[in-house]
View (tube, rainbow, N blue to C red):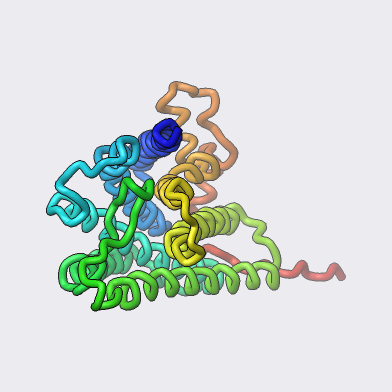
Length: 324
């Protein structure tokens, strides 16, 4: 019965991984084909593309190692402390740290663009610099937590249908968790949560946007908010479940399922909410009659071009002048 349950859970997780991996690859292809990443008036596409790219790298690890290991319930290398598992764990955790930092960049971008539309802070060059700094910071954190820390490190663990801490020195406590993992996760969720709360409070105060450009920026905000929520649920289940003392290893599969959802939700929302991506999708599948979505006609493109000559486009709502 236990083996059958493992097969069912493992099959669900692996199907989810494959579906979301294919979705990410397809959306990234559509973004590149539509040249959205080259748009100078909206640098947030660069962040979103980078996010999808490293989520693909995370899913590749899960496709070829974590997912199959969950089904078999066995280590593919010589145990949790082997070199192969250490490499996989470093890959996994480095991308997780990078994702945490990018979450804060997303929240900052939305807050600045919507609440301070006259400020041109997120230029293309600055976004590239932020990405490079985030990669360096993630590399530094994963080097400490996986290599330099006396104990302990997070590794993929098929026994818990996902991940667990490898305790190498019980007397050293868990400096990796208390100095890196928990502080980073809590800081990311708190910072993003407060940013989105302040942002929506601002929107409620000034009123809902009426122009197309402003509505698009707000849709991006909803997109990144959902990414933040799945991110927070992922690390909460990882840390809270052991504290609660749940004795069933199968329950920890929730962490993996939610984490894989977090890796794919960016692309899913792109497909659902982004008109430009949907236009490219229609072109890919040859649905020419659907390419002229609202806001994609030649006239509306010219209108957007004239209104986007400056990146200070997110206008505040104006009160109508009283008639004389």
